[in-house]
Image (cartoon, rainbow, N blue to C red; front, side, top):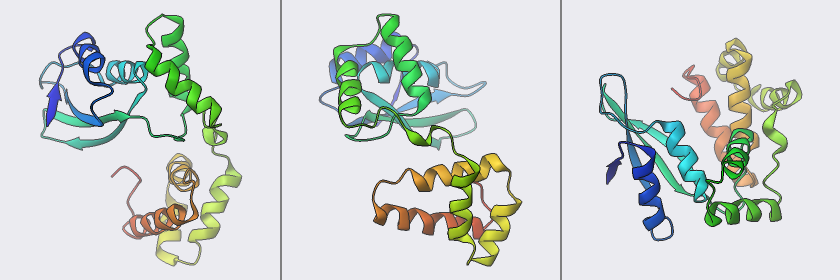
Length: 184
């Protein structure tokens, strides 16, 4: 079921009542000329306050799209942006005990700091080395901007298990053979 919240207070009220009983929800966001909703950034800030995170996006139509919000999984890495937003929310007094617990758990599990905050040329070279044997995919990878290559690299390197890396590499090669960027 998709939920539409007109402002951040409506979403915060929902989270206050449901953050521990719901695994996640799809939020509707209006585009220009679409329904008036809270912004994705406002939703993310409220989600972080309760130990939740944003995720997948799907188009509904030309006026709106949906984005998934859910409880943060144990041992999931925190992006630099979400760490900075969380610190801002703490300083503003908006962070709840649930969000603080999620942060403390991340620090205890050593996933608060993320060494992949900055994808370097060496990281990108690792992906090049793996894709090289797939001629068409490699040709397309090399023709893409460095920022796109970094996005693919971050997706691959952020996998924690070897089986996940193998699966992601296969997905990357399949997309590159079609000359698709990561978010197309």
